[in-house]
Image (cartoon, rainbow, N blue to C red; front, side):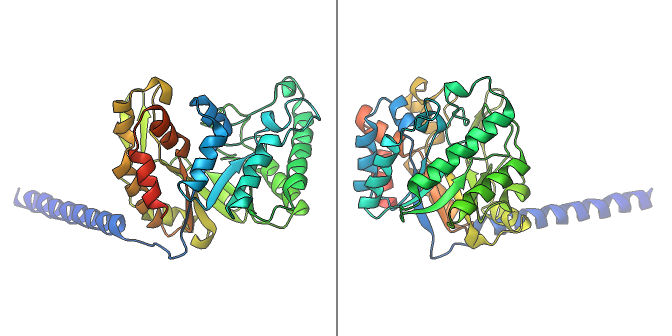
Length: 333
C-alpha cells in the first residue's frame, strides 16, 4: 500500500513539475519579442468592400493615403472587375488606385489570379460559368498575363501576389486547392517579370509547408478574435512565437515572411452592416488594434497589412465614431 502511495505521489510531483514547466515556457514565449527594426506596416484596400459599406471608394482610398499617411498598400485585381466580359478588359478603377499610390510614393502588393481577397474569394466573371476546367485554367493564365503586362512598368508595385490563400479549402467558394496548378501560375508570373512572388495561407487553419515554399515571400493571416455560431467568440491566446516557430518549421527566413492580413476590424457574425456597434466593439476597438500591431511585430516578421481600414472610415463617416481612425493615425506616425 505504501509503495502504491509513493508511486502516485511521485507521479503527482512529476505532473506538477511538467505543468509548471509548460506554463513557464508558454509565458516566456508569449512575452518574448523577435521584433525587427525594418518592420513595415500597411493596409489592405478593396473597392467592392468599400462600396458594400455605402462609402465613396475613391474618397475612402484618398483619405487612407493622405490622412493616415499609409506607405504600404495591398491591392487586388478581381477577375470579375477587370474582365467582366470575355476579352473586354477594364482596368480603369484599378489604374486609378495604382496611380494615386504612385503619386504618393506608396509601395504596392498587387494580388492577381482567380482567388483574391474578400468573399467569395473566387471572384469569377459571369461568363466563366459552365466552362470546362481546362478552358478556365487557360483563360485564367491569359488574365494573369494581361495583368502583369499591364502593370509591369509600374515600379511602385514591389510584389506580385499569386492567388489568395490558394490551398485553404475550408473557406471561400472556390475549386479545391491544387499545388501543381499554383506552381504553374508562379512560373508563369516569374517568366513575365522578375519581381518577388508572394504566396499566402491561413495563420490558424494551415500548416504552411506547401504554400510557404512555392513563392519567394510568404504571407500569413492573423485573426486573434473570431466567432463560431456554436461556441461564440473565440480568442486566440497564442504567443507570437507560435507564428515564428511555424515559419521556421516551414523553412522560411523571417525576412521573407509578412502578415498579409492582420485583423483590424470586428469578426461580425452576421456581417458588419447587420451588427450593432456594441457588438462590433466586442472583437475590435482602439486598444485591441494597438495590441494586434504590437503582437505582429513580436513575431519577427518584416511587415503586416491591416485588414479593416475601410471599416475605420465607415465608423468615422457613417457612425460618427473616430476612435479607430484616430488610433490608426497614431500607429502610422
